[in-house]
Amino acid sequence: MELEKLSLKNVDFYQATIANIPEKIATGDCFKAVVHIQNNSQVVFRRVKITIDCPYMLGTTSSKWEIKRIEPNEQQSVEIPLIAVHGGRDFLRLFVTITELFDTKPQILSLIMSVSGKGLYRGDNHTHSTRSDGQNNNSVFDNAKRVRADRALSWITPTDHCSLNTLDCDEINRTFTDFIAFPNSGEYGQVGRTLIKGHYPEGKIGEHGLQYQVKYVNNRLTDGRQWQDIVNETIAQGGLFYLAHPFSPSIWWDYEEAFNLERATGIEVWQGDYHPLDEPNRMAFDLWDKMNSIGKKLVGIANSDGHFLHRTGHPFIMGNMDELSVANIYHVLQTGCCYGSNGVHIRFRIADQENNQTVYIKKKKMVKFNIHIFDTVPILNIKILQNKSTKKPQSATIFREYILKENINHFIEEFEAEVNMNEFYRLEVITKEGTIGPGAFLGDYYGLGFGFTNPIYIAKANKNCPETVIEDLIDDEYLEYTKSGYPYYNKEEGLSLVKKL
Image (tube, rainbow, N blue to C red; front, top):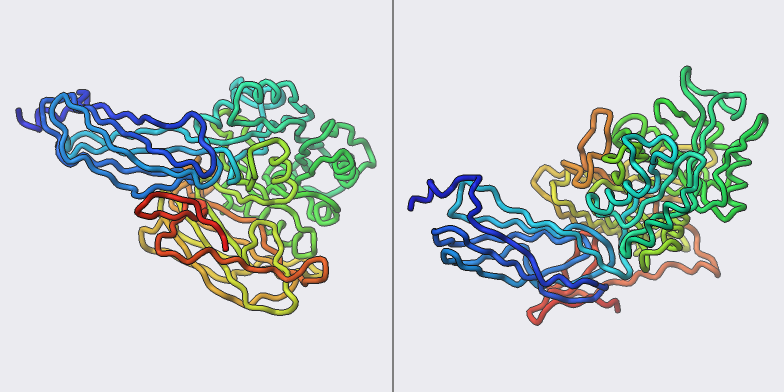
């Protein structure tokens, strides 16, 4: 029978399945996934191509596999070795192409992989439900199920206005073993200049703040009280305070109010209404840089602020944790050991330190910079931004920039540069497309991929903070990396984790 007559898109010529995935996977585990291809046609399949897109926490020996021949009504299989290099949760995707059936599109197999243990976990820390002003009847549980299944997030933080949603979080955390609803958090904002100091652009309303791990979301901002009072009460409860969407067109933080805040934990520099390259969030990044230049050392965070079900879960942060837990989510939000993204994976280190960590030096020194970026789409632009501690606020400047014109989705760079005390550096990257959400729902840059790190600070070493010691990985020709930059060995005898010297 002629192949053209078989190439009808509505005919089921073959079936592809993936099997042998362990129910529980921990860091360091090695296993072999099995891909089965069943030929349901009357034609011999030749050169069946299987391409694997590993999630960021898994390594493998090859990205492309092939079955040379499958007879009619026959099933052939291929084993794909995998290693869990670190913890996290993301999609494993397989693309199957039958070369004979040239009119049919490749079949895509997709399933979410969860790995427990030390690694990078993805979360959204600003979401709304019908407990406050969420739309389309999205409950807290609806939001959790959506981001877990469609965005492969590991946690979500309900931040309804003046509501802690404790019972909702308890229900979610009883239901799932690989997902957490971070409890006891909320958002508070107050309208008008009579209750909050500050001057707002005409037609705007007052500031909003995110309060994490508190006993109550402050709803008692009476005449004469200031935001500093709210920050102090939040910290006194053992909680964390973030400035929310400081330059949202309708909710505007006053510059003087922001700069005068003491003890605030962080600032929401990327809020999901706009892309980080659009003006509202671009202004938030600049405010962040300026506040850090006068010593505030605020954590930068990316959140969806999703009021609609389809908007939750992107953008998000990737947080470093020993394991997924409520305590470790708090630690990420407290310390800033995270980066923001809508798909791109970033590892940016200076002298082996990264997000919101400090490199201690005795004097001006040459140190090693490491950049490792991966996405499933082309990388367009990478910037290292530099700033320094000063008495007056100042914006960051470009320290080094890479403009990539080729179809590159995996970028590794290592170089040495001179750094001085009281400087700090952070990284921004732009990719062709946001692979986990468009990064925005308004503005000119909708759909672009983007990611940013928290700053790395350079400070003077003293007796309590000795000069940073750099540990190099073992130099080996078989050294490979996951998307998020964790190293492993790919040797003839199999896959194994890298150990430091």
